[in-house]
Length: 400
Image 1 (cartoon, rainbow, N blue to C red):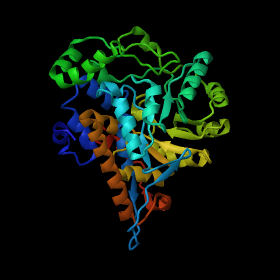
Image 2: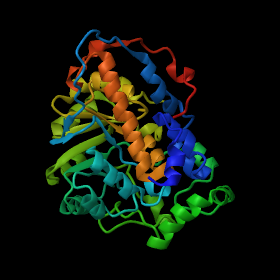
Image 3: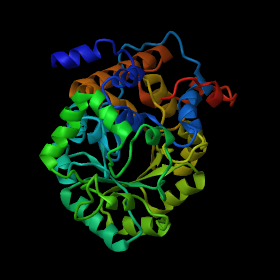
Image 4: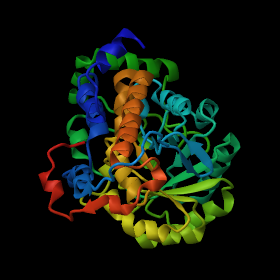
């Protein structure tokens, strides 16, 4: 570990510390891009506050000397019940962030999903991490869909994750006020932010431009994608014409495991099961799309019943091992984390990610023992008491 990484990590004790610490090292525009949520950030606050709704009723006087945190998910065994959510724009937070995250996930035997909105070719990532998943943003054009399926399949990805919740771009006010834009456009606020953070300007943005000349979103289309400075970038992503018919077509062509991410309603889960999805991602996209949605955690009960044999993966708002265990107790099979890992990587690269994973893994093992259970399979719903909804979102003070 470098001296710089040691210095930056010395006061990190929990995942929420990463967000506070990284604020010093990222320009405000980039910091807000990672931190902020859609609209008035009601859902962003609720995603955190909802964990207060469920409180533990632990067992006592049980032998917890031997603990097991492994899970089997989509045919693979992983050492922990959490993994890396797909995070677009990761390379804007730290040079080579996609490669760093993929290799770290492999070292720790955690699942990892590469976002289509990334600067690193998907063919390189699968060589770094042969168990990586690919998270696609697909249009309604069947030719492009088929081309992307062929590209991902030929690269050797075992899992295709379809992002289902972005028919149109969202409005995130905090990042816009801070000067963030896509395509990248020079503006006073962003320029001043870059000048105030030369380490990021030269170490992340500068190195990326020197290497790639014109950095591109290379995984959004079969033959690549537009540059970060190109007007064409505004046209990529999801489509308002993308429907269940496209999902059926994808299922008929894709030979590997299929995950549908961004679902919150039981009838959508049931349709995913009928189509033949292998897993569903219960997600509000980290509160980055539609404000005032329910938190994924409180959607789990109805969804678990509708999911049948499909795996249920949940994300949005998770910041400690206890949060992960609550989701598993309520019916999830695994948890994805986005912001905390992105912030840890931005702060100290692979050392930051190692620290974040160590914190989360230790919390999970400690909380299992304190709950009086030795494995994840023993997490039954009667371990939690549901206090009901008492305006948690308004009471929450921490925007994470």
